[in-house]
Length: 237
Ligand SMILES: Cc1cc2nc3c(=O)[nH]c(=O)nc-3n(C[C@H](O)[C@H](O)[C@H](O)COP(=O)(O)O)c2cc1C
Image (cartoon, rainbow, N blue to C red; front, side, top):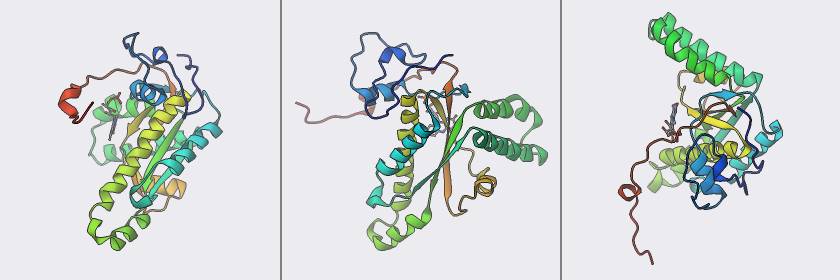
């Protein structure tokens, strides 16, 4: 599959709806702005390749914009990102496979499951071009719990919220650059091996892995529950 000609800037990206990979949307759908178009066009893409529509610097710039501009409760700025590209990305997925092979050896995972399902899935991840690891640094959360006792139990959930905001920003940000991506959770199985490989502070908590690459398959539009069951609006003029 050839790469989509997309805007290389997340802000102001103006991908027309018709270019959305593999999603058959009504042709007369009114455009409601770049952000909504990106949100509508985002899908989990599992078949990824190594072709890149942009330079690595563009990826770095996008990640830096996420870390600078995504909000956090009380401005804690507790999210940490580790970006693995090319060979480093491949090393990550080799590590994940090594961790699973350990489970096969100790009998936790059957050889059949490993060969038939897990290994092909992980090879699919390795076929991509990069992975962003999302962490939370407790050193930047705990002091706030102590300083604001009224909210002390909220800082944990709020740290998850800001982390998720970074994940979503980067998911659609990567899409705006022309990548496909999917979100994975191989933590905590891989945490210590990953920390060792890239010298990540062991206190940092790994939350998720966003895998990206050239989209080699169509994104699938998933069924949506009715909006009216999920949104209530009052006072509309
Ligand atoms: C919080 C969260 C956790 C997810 N975890 C995983 C995961 O571990 N593995 C995976 O393959 N997809 C994961 N997904 C992807 C969802 O299954 C997917 O986004 C959802 O089914 C909707 O499909 P779409 O992304 O194509 O719109 C996760 C998504 C979210 C928002």
